[in-house]
Image (cartoon, rainbow, N blue to C red; front, top):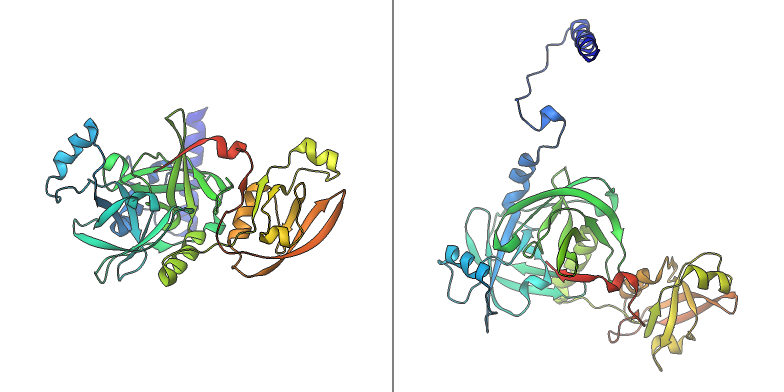
Length: 372
């Protein structure tokens, strides 16, 4: 039966070609990705790979190396004394040498070195770094460099194929492939992460997450672990958020985020029902800092923040991002639920200090996260 179906389908295809007067399509090479309807990742690597870099550093006091590290260091003997083998990745975002990487890659570094895909190596200058988003901007003195194409992380979809290039376990320019598992994972941090199942290991941090159009849609940031075991869950900073941070790092060398002086917690389904909210939403104000912006604006412990500066607060994890993006000194409206009714308040966002954090570890904060 399968044979009959195959021959009937082939006959129909042949008839269609003859009817159209078109020549038969060129033969697809045996064993190629196209033969099986799969993406050709080799072409993507050729396209994006030249813009990806490996990053190594020197330390004032070098961290103790394990046996695997010492074994790998024997293959990088040409590096200056005290310099590590590649410990992270990055990618060029301009032809004149600006490149994006992860803040964690540069922690405690005294000198930074960047190795291009063609083997050239340059010392790098730290332009600016932002620990909360785990992003850093570097500059090397070179021109006419290959640069990565920047995509739009707002258009990604769960299930899309993605490709990552990094330096896992100090093996530079390594390629791994997977799919987007969740497009916007809120964890209470200042950015909503792209979750993927791309294989991620220590050393992948700072490398690009690439779509099938060869565009960077994320920056590898961390992997999720449980009991020290890797679960093949990787998180990347969406490129739209990353490029906003890049602009601040270029101009000021740092990112300044507003605060309002509260500690927040989740609003559970049971609590929402008792309070008359209807469904779980918003962020519960657990504590208010005396004399802080929230206190001066009239917020109280027990209030549920439903909207901030005109934006709905979907859950507790979305509030730090909304607050952090508001300029210091900005006057904003805050919608709260108090005593069974909705109230409108206003406050002035304060300078960085104690950022809003959960009063107790929430579920998404309880998982172990480790920089990659």
